[in-house]
Length: 333
Image: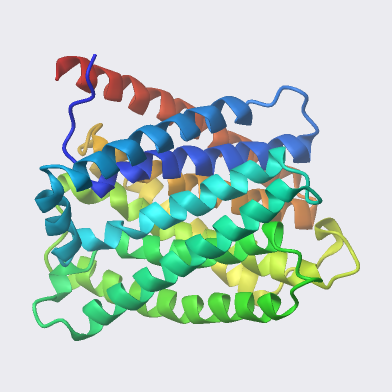
């Protein structure tokens, strides 16, 4: 069997989604105090896909398909997928923390890797935002939901930073994380308005691009988690006893409204079928499910906890369907 697929940064959405689901499953396992940790199986699957796709991408970049990758980077819409690389790296680094003691030297390497990934993601922020604001050939129809991947990475920098960095040793980073959170929140508002305008009054997305609409769930869901964790840093109580801020409620409510909206319009997504674009369902749903777990933990809500379990079951079933499709495509090629 030979994996014969074109060199494209689009395929980083596969490990990005798998690692996101593994973190979702891990947190739910801890919350329910389960002994059977299904998150490890998803985590290993995510690691394997991350290494395979990274190797494939590097080989193609150094080989004859480099021109195709550079065309993606220079394309006004496809360039928005490149932050998936740094976001996946951050997910990979955070997934390693479970196996590394905070006092070990290996944890220092995690911190170094985290700061390197943050630096690379900042360069993508600077480059992409500059192009989107000042490049003449970008029109309203070039605006895609995939632009939210950049903002998802910014919010995840906050989430990973709280978990990986000892903020008592480096208190200035706590202020930097608040800066990341606040600036990204402003960008999220402007991106959301412009994308809704494009979807309502301009040319709609093509049928095969419709799964990317689920990315609307990711930034507000990750912002919910980031806001809870930032408030928890200096709190004297656990998350279970921590009141939720009005901003957290607004963000979670927006994500819930988008989830219900896409759920009622499921027939439009059904027409898109299974394809490489369908992996766009996985990470946003994983982020929304994880945000639901944090909200359930803060409120002590059994209903939201059961709802988050349902989302995880749907995600596992979806990963199974997409994996079968991927194997069939590989065998066909």
